Image (cartoon, rainbow, N blue to C red; front, side):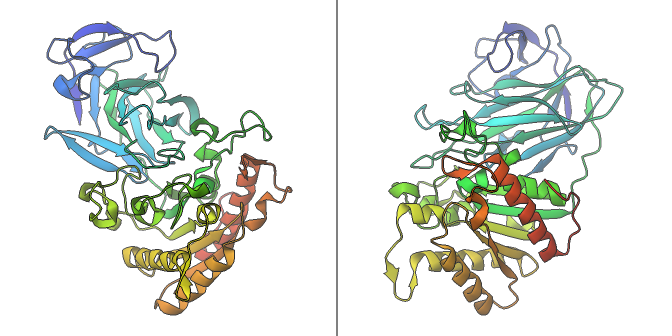
Length: 439
């Protein structure tokens, strides 16, 4: 849906992007007195260029917008829609017509600066990288205009993609809301979205921890001195995204560093709400319920609707943080880890049905839990009728022959090797031909 903004203009500046940009603040009610009070009040949106009072406002419920990855749609004040998301690899896609530029109005939720973790994004035009940006200076700002693209030919249709390249909340001891919202786009007068991009028919879902998120895969400043941080990871170089790229598949990735099935890494205090088996049920990983009796410790509005997207395979790599955090004591014959993992497998089966193949992976940071993971595969196969489940060995990718390790994690080179082997393994399981021999 397009709305033309006829508004008053007040000049404002922002350090969200290059300093040579100056942007007008558009206030639909003719006043700019409360410009930063609300992302939605009085349709106050920032534009990219000076002097434009007739820019097109493209809403998030426009049929030309596509979202790939878990997300939540929130209706504000009964009318304005935002798309909220926090998992790595989520992309917002559209085909822009009749415009030479476009910007997005966005915000990031954060309870306080101590728990606020920035997010990073990449913008692509026709599959080519155009720019990158992050939310490091967004705290306390309810509406931030982000220039996405400029200098385009308005006579052509351009495929625009915004990709979230970092995880929702890096390695925090307790999960707190840290998600990003996008409220819509601004573009040239007369701009519109062409028919929505066609998405691949193949679908893969990944559930995991820092290994899946790509923690430290940038190895900054170098493999020896690299330190874990939100800006030292890039999902585009992580094995899940590379596998999806190789196999030509849509990708849903639910990954959070430091969290396990039963306990967090390094003996971090970890409530039951923080277990990845609960996070898997969420649209937004960082939005959990304060009510301990809530289903999966998740607010009802944040429970993911499994009926809207069914993957061909779910690939799970969990257990490293359980090992690093210390194993729980056995309960009878089957310990807590095994029982929790079997329960997760059953829930995946119940959510998607027997047509979805489940792959449990192990490694490469430790192999101490791999025998337990293999037991879960065999026990689940014997217990659940119709279940298709396989074990994928990833233990050897940090033996030094596939690239260095960084902060004890796989480097970008090791991720690429994991992806090449993983794409071949998953492709054979699902009977898919490879689009790329290497990734």
